[in-house]
Length: 248
Image 1 (cartoon, rainbow, N blue to C red):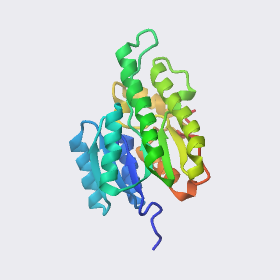
Image 2: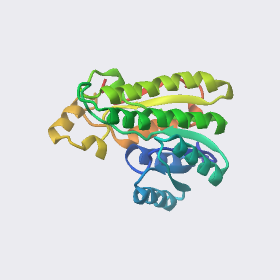
Image 3: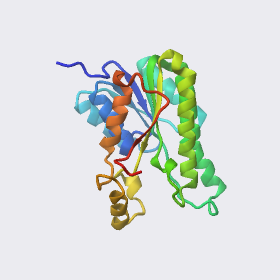
């Protein structure tokens, strides 16, 4: 029997009780990783993911933490360490999207989005610098909108562009320890978040922009994350990888 590619690894995935985050922890678990499911308020959803992974023979724990606050990020890493004594893989997936024109964006909206989308990944990466195993993996979830000019997406695109640059710089800073740092940029993925506030006609229009004439699936993103987390991706670092089916 082939050994699973992530056997013995401990993976921490922020914002992983639903959507893309859930698909990522389930995929990493199938590759043999023990996973830490981070959630902010959906404890029932997190417990559901833990149970699903356990039923498949995997090991998972759920940890509540507000990653928009440094104290929450620190507690998340401390609890992961208390449970397992190591961290090998960090996936910064937690994020929100607020669509406003530049003219209409309010200060509290800007602050909230940047706290979750930029401050959270930044200080999670800081914790990882001190705690992640040599040869570990850091994978940030960015977005295809950084390469587009979409009205209403200014602060969201700006936050993800910041994550892209964090990825590049950290890859150089931590490379001596053979830790890889990459970003995955999904295009439109069929999740509750994407469907919120959109008509079926709008969703079909987005699907038709992809080369394959469909929206992305959460598994499309999770498979690439699992590859980057494995030893097969040991020579890939500092890269911004677009996973969008030819959307852009």
